[in-house]
View: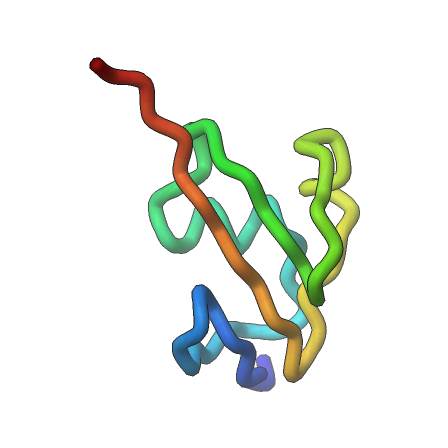
Length: 69
């Protein structure tokens, strides 16, 4: 598989192509955590994670949601 370069939370990151947002989340340990994802400056609904494709050069921002007081 070819490696692609993306920006993940502002940092360079290499991934195997092709990859969905769900697969990316799984690969970095966020597969079962509540997160907000922005792909190329567009916010995604969680229902879009399995079909949204992370392409070469994509900018991905991931924010983990945490409850607390």
